[in-house]
Length: 254
Ligand code: ADP
Ligand code: MG
Ligand code: MG
Image 1 (cartoon, helix red, strand yellow):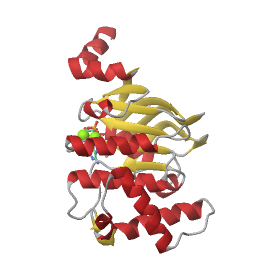
Image 2: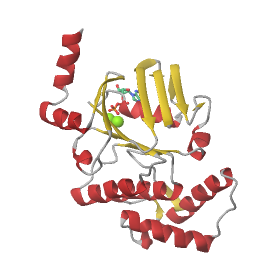
Image 3: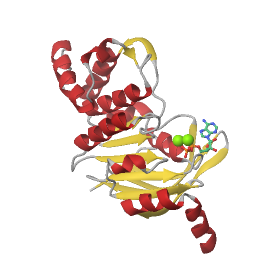
């Protein structure tokens, strides 16, 4: 039961090749982690998967639930259950968090052929989901992400994910800038949302997050390719030896 299959994916940013042949297969029920040095192309991969217009796909394929999605808009991909949590969540002054969440939720319901949910029922639903990220209801009345701390923004991303119940959740550096308590809340949220029917792709520079979310597969991104894969022990090895050891291994193979 394959959710995502990426084959020989290449992509440019402003004419420069960044992804140089990415291969990745993610099955239902799996949690994958991609680690790698800064600048190796991790965020580029997440943005290409989400369909960000600044990233030009030059080759390869991305098959999601059996369908090539490269021609689909970011909105269509989101409606079909791909959720990208941002490294730097947007602030939208004047739009309350609650309204934002309700519109996002109802848009997805419509796409699934379901009726819109009314404001009161929606508030009940959100209050349930607030538990997942240990957020206080006062959060909902504030403008989207405006003046939120780093940890609050990341928890808000998880709240959105809890509501939208994506099939594929992609979390790009959700751990960056989080103190240990916020990190645990975010990790717990992901663990609670993980089911046999969905999958998660965690992108992280540090091993720390993986102490709280156990990935089934760990991959290393190096110069636009996933060069090594393994189990969670690979993350520990990276923590210990740094990314240099990957480079040495690659040079030895060349
Ligand atoms: P990572 O997430 O692994 O740190 P990125 O995917 O952010 O790496 O970046 C990979 C490379 O692509 C870097 O050299 C970066 O400067 C370049 N890059 C990424 N996004 C852009 C962009 N919007 N414009 C120009 N260069 C970019
Ligand atoms: Mg980076
Ligand atoms: Mg990045």
